[in-house]
Amino acid sequence: MMLPAGFDPLDVQILHALHLDGRVPFARVAEVIGVSDQTVARRYSRLRSSNALRVWGLVDRTRLGHVEWLVRIRCTPDSAQTIARSLVRRNDTSWISRTSGGTELVCVTTAATPGESLLLRELPRTARVLDVTAHCLLHVYSGRAAGVVTKLSALTPEQAARLRPADLPATDAARPVDPVDPVDLDDLDRQLLGLLHDDGRAATAELAARTGASRSTVQRRIAGLRATGVLYFHVDTRWPLLGLGVRTLLWLSVGPARLERVGLALTEHPEVAFVAATSGSTNLHASLATRDIPALYTYLSTRVSTLRGVQTVDSAPVLQTFKGAAGLHGPAADA
Image (tube, rainbow, N blue to C red; front, side, top):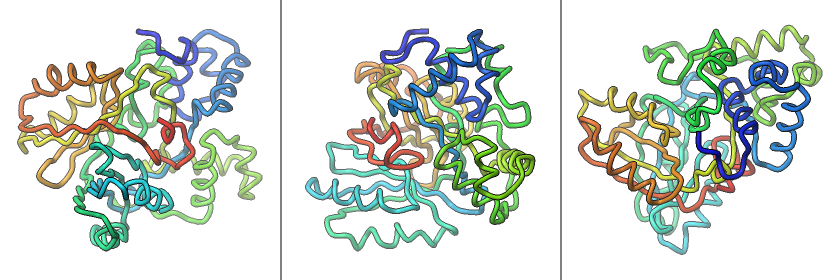
């Protein structure tokens, strides 16, 4: 494994462990990688206090019956910052990025039903918005609970297997794709999800005290929310510290008969952080992390271009990330 620019090997092992299970006990991580509990706790505390690492408990809103949209907004150059800031303030947006020389914004938004997105109704009325294109996210192959850190191979396959929760799918692609009934949440579920959003590693005792539930009830509810796919843990870190200085968005047009195979193939590429099937003239979206622009060129010319079924590829390096998966103040927002 090539050593990332800003982390030492132990840091990356801890990052890898947290990507496998955001709430894994430090004692278990220490046992698997062969250091003391105190060392793991101290390293985690240092990374978190320096804003190099944050564990968020996030909600997969598709499991609540909501629909996710990937929105591309073409605007005048002088309005991009203002529009981006207005998008950041919304609670139905994530992954807000500026691309294409500063004239395009890309974000993810959610809606309770396909036709009820307030953002999609309001944007065309916004001054200096030239064009809006929305792609419904049909199926996520990889990227909710996984990412490029797990592909750095800081842990051996045997170590990863010992840290991965046995009762959860190993990858996003392994999750069932057949339609299932939306999950109903009660007040305790919503309280726990709110607290875990603020700190995905909040102690069970703290969660119990703040919700008024017993520790056993809290543990059981968290396990249930994870098992149904409603709750997953996102480890937010500064990609440049991993030696990954360039983030790029891809929109691919793939023959329908090859869509699933290409999507699954992309999940195996070390450069791919997220990949999903979408509606629209381009039907596959991916987010990449590469060392630099030459590495991006190599990937586009030797990896994606060789996949059977790929007809066209539209690429756009990200110039600025205003909001990440969970909120404005995570490490990704500074990438």
